[in-house]
Length: 286
Image (cartoon, rainbow, N blue to C red; front, top):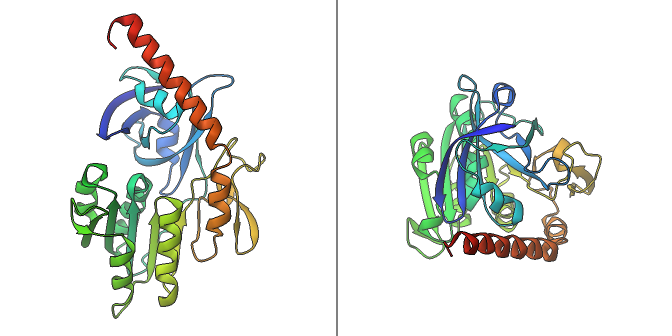
């Protein structure tokens, strides 16, 4: 059991939880993730990136968006309550060294897993350009934390409600066209955003790392649910990743696989929502 020691709502349906997990906090590295399970036997297992950790306090920070049944249940937990199981740290850590200039691009909730990577790249002595993007201003997360780490910071919103109006690929292309060009790009966000970030850097020959969040069950590579095609070879996100060469990932195939259980997820979410409303009616709070 892992106690929730703090809870914060960052934006609509986006939560930040600090959870007691001392062994994971001590061992985790940037880029790694955990698998969270709320129910002991048959509960859904969901992968969440470790957004931060404090080994002295013995806590890890999880930032997630409530989009399905289990993540909504996770968001409903209160400080002092516990998560049944947290498995990790899993996945290969980010390769961090002094590359030179690193441009880090975060889209929406993808800013959460990007944060520890930016921390690590900064500590290694790199010059950091951080680009954050979201559909609208209220969906931007971790802006203050990222500004504090960045040597150059660019904010984009689709509707122009904050920063530049447009997509993150626009400033990314401009930065790649500079002399000298960046030594490395890291992009984390929705699959379609990562796909077009990789296409934006490809003509300039800028190495590009993406972090994939696929359907995952066991986290050991045995179930095969998280398989992706990278460089025409099958890879497993849980053990071979989650980070891969963005220029080699077959994003179209990955996005098709991500839609495989959408109808089941929608049905479970609808049922969960109806159960919540029923509980509120019983309590006279609906």
